[in-house]
Every structure is written in C-alpha cells, then in structure tokens.
Length: 175
Image 1 (cartoon, rainbow, N blue to C red):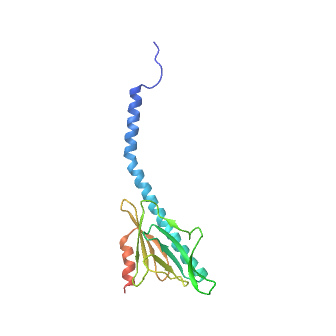
Image 2: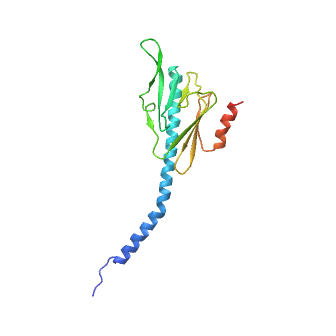
Image 3: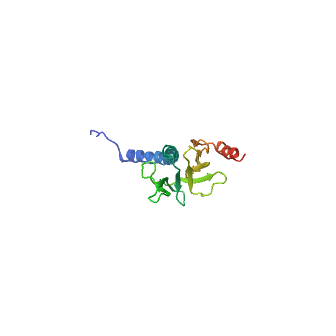
C-alpha cells in the first residue's frame, strides 16, 4: 500500500496550537508598540501646531491662540482679525494645521502654564515671536509621557522625554 504525502490531523492541530501561543506572546508587545507610536505621533502633531501658530503670529503680526477644549482632548488655532466695525476679534483658522484636531483614544493631555497666565485653556503667541510659558504633557495608557515645551521669549518648541529638563523651565521663569 502506498502512503499519500500530506499532514495528519494531529500535526495540523499541533502547528495551530503553536501559532496561537506565539500570537498570545507577541500581542502585548504589539499593542505597547502601537500605543508608543501613537504617543510620538501626537507629540509631533502638537509640536507642528505650536510652530504653525507662532509662525502665523510673526508673519501676520497679530496675536494667535491655541485653544483647548474643556477636557483637553481637542485643540485648534485662532488668530486676530479686524471686524467691519474696526474692532479686533479672534476667528478660528481653517488651514490643515489650524483646524480642530482631537487626540487619539488612549492619549491624554495636561497643560502646565507659567505664572500670571490667566486663561487655562489657551496658549498665546505674540507678533514678536514670544509665547506663553507652557509644558504640554502627553501620556498614554501605559504611563509613558512625552513633554512638549514652549519657551516664552523665543517661542521655541521642543519634545522632551526627561521630566527633570521640563521642571527646569519653570525654575528659570520664577527667578
């Protein structure tokens, strides 16, 4: 009797079991990597939006604000514009970087501003390039944090992963 080439049912079940075990081991790493990537992308988006707001303030010679929603999940830019009556009011930007954006699920934002800055839901950028002192802390579900810092006199925006460097910004301002 001649044997037919192929796999037995037992061999197929063993291989399937091994694949399931390998996927179960790899899945947490994959989820962690995806959350870390989402955190980095959110920080990069926030940095680009802050740089855009500063650039717009300098180029147009008007104050520009980055406005945050009540829960800090959404944000957009607004710039000063003259009205028909000659007054100045803030109007939302409709450009790709100025439009309203929402943070991805699993990413939280906390805003820490410098001393004597009243409205807690906005950051102001001035025509001379200066801005409010601020640190935007972005965190994912795993507790990993990235800090987007905004320097007050230069308007320079940086992403930091070291919290001690961030705290240094506020000790300099308090002097």
